Length: 312
Ligand SMILES: Nc1ncnc2c1ncn2[C@@H]1O[C@H](COP(=O)(O)OS(=O)(=O)O)[C@@H](OP(=O)(O)O)[C@H]1O
Image (cartoon, rainbow, N blue to C red; front, side, top):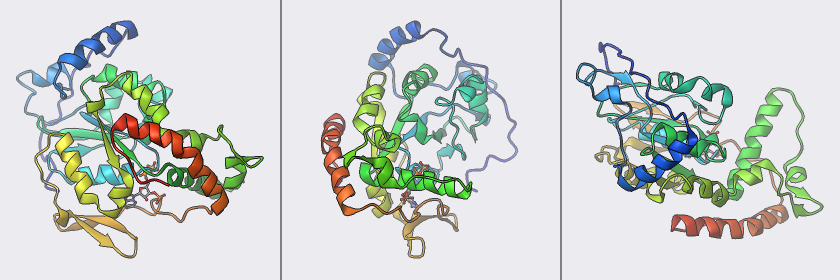
């Protein structure tokens, strides 16, 4: 690929001083958010003379934090079209899975692709958005990191979420309750249903905004990304301070898939079959209840992000 970094020696960075004390980090947080530029060097050693120009694995400068089933894979793959971007191919789940987090930042860095100093490393883990411990942990790694949040109609997201869990259970030959049994208790929306809670975007975003400034979080419209990806990618490039390199010719609509696929350097790529599965059915009455339930949370989310979406 045009982005491959052939024949360059791998030089691992020194371990940065990973936030040891929350209280100290909280104090620093105030200083950083008011004075620092959005990007900061991944670690002090990266600017030192001998290793500066070498390709290295670096901590991400931008992270797609969610939402689960929002279009995070499509967004990551589309950003990867940019010559100045390299992405972690697999979801890393570093900040939200204790076992991974305990392995420390060296382990996290080792999951990242090789990049040159001018390139931006991006990872995506949809589980970050709803996990309470994650914002402070990411801030401790890099308070100037840029965050991308791709959202989608929360009712549609919930059904997609259920469909994925159902699919996993069925492939493991395990039983699973019908969606309406989980969603409704005595005809009322069951607020305890996990997939419902993951769609309460305002609650999760409120926690991120206790740690990061609003301008560090770029909201991508996941429904718009499905309909016409290019404008969303142009906005993301702008947010990431990348020169505009992704263009409409990088996308073509694949009628068999029913989605846009990617074209780059003569290669085309569609997302795998786990994306765009037929959704589990939901009665129109249950959907109506769900949409009514989401009206207020959605309004709160729109106020927080300063824009609205045409959700049900
Ligand atoms: N271009 C393109 N190709 C295929 N799929 C696309 C694309 N753009 C967005 N999407 C939508 O992405 C949805 C899956 O979201 P995620 O990748 O965030 O899912 S996951 O949380 O990582 O499992 C997936 O949701 P479902 O349709 O519900 O499966 C897709 O609708």
